[in-house]
Image (cartoon, rainbow, N blue to C red; front, side, top):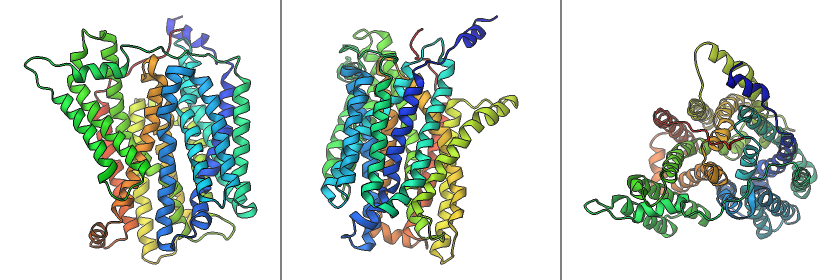
Length: 518
């Protein structure tokens, strides 16, 4: 028997995995339970004092600012876990913060400041644990059983959508029938149950200790590369990084119409983008000062971050199903008992069908036909499918703007296209991000993967801010279509261009295997 076959036969599923999976199912119910009714609650209750023509725009801004926070705080959670407390402790403590946030939503349904503080706590708790739970799953595997890891990551993503399905279906009914306190309180109870389940598995987990302060860490190598001067060579990379810092400072004061959260996120984009390019240009200057392994590790991380950046347009489109698509559903005909936000339950239902269909039917069939869908090919195709979904939504919006009555079942087609794209991008990307991350940077790299969602929502806020300008609005009017329809086609084109760029860049990407040794 070959060595590879022996490895496959002997590979065993870690017995602690069910605790993490079950906890994640409850946590995702809690998160999507509140998230999927948030836009409706803002429109019908908390923001009633805002004039109706402006209310929808404000609700979208609050929603996407919240999502930006959720996917911004993974940077903090990943750094704390990797450097100080470890993944398990950080997840447990931030889960308690998460529970407190849910309590605020339930108790302060009529108090805007209290409610927004609850959203902040949920963003901190949910965002802080987001990269850690998925990387904590990866820690339970080593190179002897990594063949099972992608199946567990798929199962992990399946249970996320199991929780999301029931939350999306039930919470709009509870909001309408029992009020906001109950509708926001039930997710809080589920989050507490999730915390208890995670705690129960504490003696069975593999705990990877935090990494001590490393003189050859990612940031130290980047700093050396940017600051080291070589006689006769220009410091182009250094000045590019300085320009990024200057643009970051300027974005805090000079970009009109965006919130402080969005401004901070935009500043981070400038620092990461220009600083990363500058470091890439001068990285060889760090050799001799830092080990070759550390320099090569930084090079691989920078290449990985380019792929993450190209995924951000997908998240711009995906997360608007809970805002833009809900608002479109309000304009469509539907049964009296059916709430617009309930349509979102179709997304997790399709995910639960597509993950086993892809793994058991589609991928094996394509492999027998000689087509190998690698992780990067899947992700590029997924971005493209999200663009196709928004083309369909755009044409539906044109029909609505023209006075046609459309039944809400028309949204099934774009949901199917978007969900297929989600499975290809997100379920694949979780394992891909973990496998490519250096061992000492698992939490931080998974944080950068989550940060791609933040930046995707930033593009939404910037697009919404731009159409508030009278000049932009007048230009859109010359096209003969509404601002809403124009934005839909804009985001579709944005995703399709990103898919093309992703496919071109992925052709030269070298895959890594950064699982721990058995």
